[in-house]
Length: 222
Image (cartoon, rainbow, N blue to C red; front, side, top):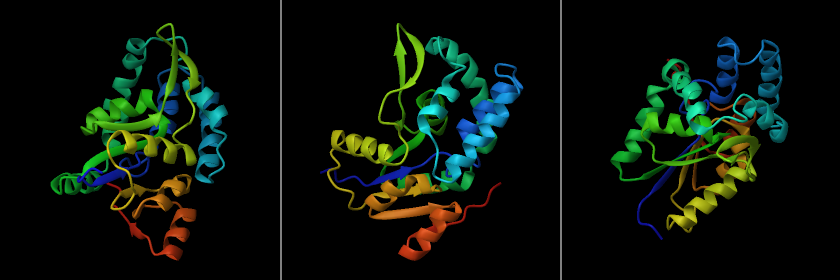
C-alpha cells in the first residue's frame, strides 16, 4: 500500500467551467471541420449526458468522426489550438487551488475523465497532471480508427479504470482517497472513495450528496 494520499479529479465542469467534449464539437463546427448540423446533434447528446442517460457508443463515434483516419500528429494540429483558445479560459482557478492544496499535502493527483484521451491528455499536460485516465481511443496502422477501447471512462467504466490504475500504483484500498466531481455519471466512483466531494454538482448528484452527507463545494465560475 502506498503511503501517499490520492486525490482524483473529474475534468469537465469540475476543473473546467464547461465540458471539453461538447466544446470540442462546437469548435470543430466553428472552424468548418464539421457542418452546422453537428451542433444540434451535440446539444442532444449533452442533454442525455446531464441526465445520466448517454449512449456512449453512439456519442463516441460522433465525437471521434473528425479524427478518424488521422494520425496523432494530424489530430494534435487540431486539438492543441483548441486547448489554447477554448480550454484555457475555461480552467477554474479555484479548482486549481484544490489541486495545489493536495500537492502541498504530498498527495498524488489523478485526472479521471470520460472524455476521450485525444482531448484529455493535452489538457492534462497544460494542467501539469501526469496521471491520467480517459476513454482510450483505438488506433490502427497509426491512424485513429474512430472507436474507443472498452471500458469507457464513464460511470462503472471509470471506476474500473481507476481500480486498474490504483493496483498498478500500489493503492490497494479507497480508504483515504478523495474524488471531486460534478456529475451523476460519476456516482459509482463517488460511492467507492472515502471522501466524495461534489463540485458544483448537477441536480441529481446534489440531491444524493445532501442525502448522504457528502461535502458539496460551490466554486465560483470566473
